[in-house]
Amino acid sequence: MLTPQEVCARASEFRGLLRERAPAVRECEAIDVIRALEELKSAIEGAQAALAVEFDGLRREAEAERGVPVAARGKGVAAEVALARRESPSQGSRLVGLARALAEEMPHTREALESGEISEWRATIVCRETAWLSREDRAEVDRQIAPRLADLGSRQLGREARRIAQSLDVEGAVRHLDRAESERRVTVRPAPGAMAYLTALLPMTQAVAVYASLTRDAEGARVTGSSEGRGKGQLMADRLVELVTGQERAADVPLKIQMLISDGSLLDEGTAPGWIPGHGPIPASAARRVAGNTRGEVFLRRLFTSPESGELVAMESRSREFTGELRRMILLRDDVCRTPWCDAPIRHADHAVSHASGGATSFENGSGLCERCNYVKEVAGWRHEADPRSLSVTTPTGHTYSADTPAMARHIEAGIQRLTRAPLPQWERSSGREQASGPEQFAEREQAPSQDPEEVGSRGIA
Image (cartoon, rainbow, N blue to C red):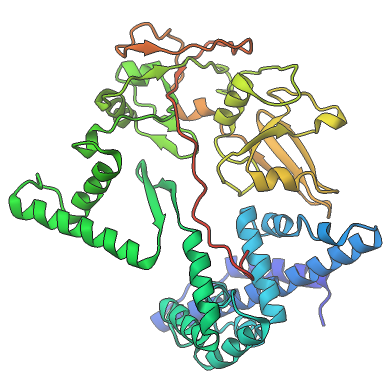
């Protein structure tokens, strides 16, 4: 039996062997290797799940010996697993929840994963569809579906697991449906090409009714000749915007967003892209089109960056909390949660080195974090070290993970002209005492609070 150190050494050796492999000379050879590696990947994911449970147990035992209250034990485990797997903290919670469910309640699904017969995603589907069941009923679903785990597609597997679960606990299925309906929500997340996904999680009957209504309106526009060359999907999307906003045309919606862009790109013919915090770049021409097409008033705020690094300049505050312009600058600088691989929307602006430990309420010591990551860093053994350029996270096991902070001006054309030629009607200037200074100027527009990405929470897939 290999020790953990030997496993790490063998894994490193095998990675080297894969890089040195000879190219396939026959089609069947390539397919055989792809299949073998897929099975190996699934087996590795199964081993990772087992190790996550072992790590959780070791951490809880150590905390029990230190006298940590039962309710506080295990905090930070999911975040540490996420960092080790280079995933977001929310995904880490799902992975640890999956690992516990496989270890404690679903032995057949665990065996299929560890043997390479199914992927981690397929195992997740089964656990997710049975998370509301009792331990005994969940084990029964695991037993009944075991012979078909490797044969069903992902959708079929989810439906079969749901069918068995609902047949085992009819009343529980109704209660689960009621709980699910209480979790209805609307979320938004970035998409390629300066687009975004607007997602509504609705009861099935409502979702089908909405889709049918949009389809009917789109078909009506095509029949009456008012489609203006738009396809069915485009017509449905435009109709949705018009119905929600009350505008006559989707393109006429007044925009209230933040957008960072240099004066050269906004007012001249510069080519450097703008940047929408939390969503990413937008081509300069598209940014100018957005600014020019809106019928709402446009408020501009001048922000300044360093010409050498392209970073927003420092700000200080005597307050214990990050508020006002200092908080705004940190949120603009960090864009999304600074924790490596997290990328969740920023909810908290807080000290990297805590105020109680002497950390300053400053631009250098401030971090934009999601709620989960901000709470995790307060758990014993976690340490954050930050400056405007990067964040370094040290976990209780002594592992350190670092992430650079994206400088806005690295994505935006450097500019030093004053915004005196703006054709837009109204300026908004800061009235607070906290001020930025520096040679580059950027336009900013108001933004509504960003929404969390869609998440599916359940027992076993937290």
